[in-house]
Length: 166
Image (cartoon, rainbow, N blue to C red; front, side):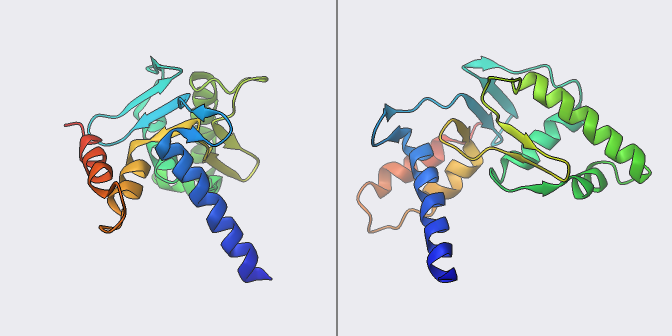
């Protein structure tokens, strides 16, 4: 039973990733990601096609990049505080993290009634994994592993190469 659940979870994750890569769903057609995060080359974030520039600090940009590298993965707040502010006492590091999360909620538009791209609770933080969120690094990883014998492999590899911005 656990093996079936694991396979089902893997299948669901693959379906979400494939939909994000292909920018389509069987029922709705083309999907335009609302949040686009570019980590390859110059760091860049766009929300609904508009550049996001109000991060206030390098820590905020670094946290977005760190979380976006693995969308859907919940990171412990304690781990993030220690990772981003190792020289600070624990309380100060956690306070810094809370401040940065407040900034990110504001700039990523996670107010009531809007899409929640930044997901956080009392113990964890993550970037949503959905077709509405596009991360070039994640797309590159998926495209670069396209089997040679699969139809469309050349196009997938060309798309992967085109993701890099220097």
